[in-house]
Amino acid sequence: MNITLNETLNKLRKIYQSVITIWLVLFVIFSSVSVAKSIPLNTQIELVNSELFILKDPKLLLDVDDAFARFRLGDFVKNHNNEVSFGFTNSAVWAVLPIKNTSDSSVPLILKVDNAWLDEIDVFFYEQSILAKTVMLGDTSAFSNRERQKRMPSVAYQFKPGTTYIVMRLKSDDPMTFPVYIGDVESVEEFDQHNGYFYGALYGALIILLIYNLALYAYSKELRYFLYSFYLFSFTAFNFMYTGHGFWLLWPTEPALQQWLMPLLMFVYLCSGVMFTIEYLQVKKYLPKLYSYRPFIYGFLAIVGCLIVIVGSKSFAVMAQLIILSTVTVWMLIIGYYSLKSGNPLAKFFVPAVFLGTTGSFISSMTTWGLFPYTQWAFRGIEIGMLLEMSLLSVSFAFNFKVAYDAKLTAEHYARIDPLTSLYNRRALKELVYPVWNLGSRQQTSMSILLIDLDWFKRINDEFGHIVGDDVLKHVAHALKSRLRASDIILRWGGEEFLVFLPDTDVLQARALAEKMRCYFDENNVNDFAKVTISVGVASGVASKVSFDDLLKLADASLYKAKKSGRNQVVIVDELSQELV
Ligand SMILES: Nc1nc2c(ncn2[C@@H]2O[C@H](COP(=O)(O)OP(=O)(O)OP(=O)(O)O)[C@@H](O)[C@H]2O)c(=O)[nH]1
Image (tube, rainbow, N blue to C red; front, side, top):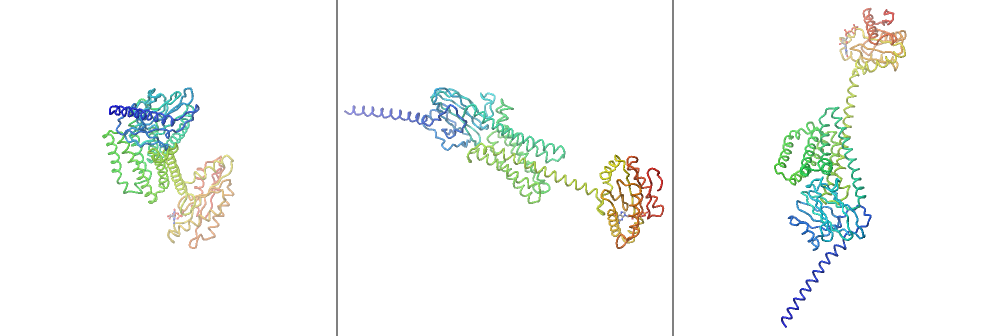
């Protein structure tokens, strides 16, 4: 009886175990199949992270068969919230995407991982439980071995009717986002094309800014334009590298280069940012104390660079630099703020520019690390932010150039103005008189020059002092100018000598004007203290027949004669007769 009971219990246990096992297998199969992604024939590209089943493998214990068996046993967790970041920290993550083809023919689709920065992406296609295809898409394998030679890791596959399981093994040294897209060839290519437009526009704009700033440097030889160009170039190179463009287009057979260029270019970008900030914000002038710490700052960066090489670990390099990058960014904002407080006008551009760049990088980093919801635009925040930063800094250069140019024009203007009388001085002769002379020469008109000199001016200085002498000169200048037409030009020619150029004026008109001036001073006091007379040398001629310099010599000779003949008179030499009129 006992034997019969034991046998029966054993049989029941076996049946129970079999039922449970079958139920479990059916549950796993049906639960997987029932949640498998069904594909219509015309599948648009879509993000399928919410369809993934995830299992972390921190100790790297599993091979693909183990992982798939664990999936079938239900050990994987559904990635319900469409999360695309698993915070990889040197551990592997397994992801399974079941795809159910409900049609009765094969459907060609592309699986695409929209991140060019992952070390390992091994993809396995299981048809039922048979491994049908394996591809390695991560940065640790040569790009040239990839079946699809596209910038982002992707693989094409013919999905047979029924369910195919895509098993992925992902590994990265850094916290990393992992957006998985699936779609038909056409929509994936369209997606790639849109990304291509974005990067085309981005690099186009960055290269234009680079050329513009190099041209500014070539023109001005100012170091800050060169350092800015270097900063711009190192960002572009760094971005070109980590967006996968470099691996795709420049070094497809060199996975080791792809791995190490990342920390190297990040380091160059970081150093260029520090050097540019110090030069751009004129730290030497506005924050001299900080400027004196320069050797420590560069020394610190050099130590970090050496440490990265000595440690030789890529994850250490990337982590160390992510920390320094954030520190440098905060440092840039702080010194920008203090420069602003010290009255540096360029800081007005620098602070918002760096703020925009930092905000973009922050959004990208948070998205990459899974702390912000993933969108294509949030993922590209760093590029958009940097483009805004670089553009604003370039605008600041244009502004700075304009300020310098205006200052130069002002300096040039004042170099041509006599500060005492506010008349133009000798330096303005070429610019003011020559064009009018050339016009008169073409039109065959008469031109006249009056050279006017105050008589015995030294005595006024000696008698009343230089201040009164200056005042006399001012009044004389004003009295002379007020007797001229708008088209006449008066210059302070020397100490107490004035040159008046009279376009379209013949000898008689010139003499009349000179006489009118002489009479005025003869009959009036110039100011409350002094009376002064003038001697005037007049020369007239037709511009096409005599040069300006020759006419000036004649006017000078006339003035000399006027002085010799007793002063307070007008003497005229006609250019034709060369005789006194
Ligand atoms: N106050 C003042 N004096 C000036 C200025 N420029 C030149 N002078 C003076 O003008 C005087 C010119 O003296 P001279 O060259 O001997 O000529 P003058 O006394 O006018 O005699 P003649 O020209 O021969 O009639 C000098 O005493 C200069 O110092 C100026 O800007 N201000």
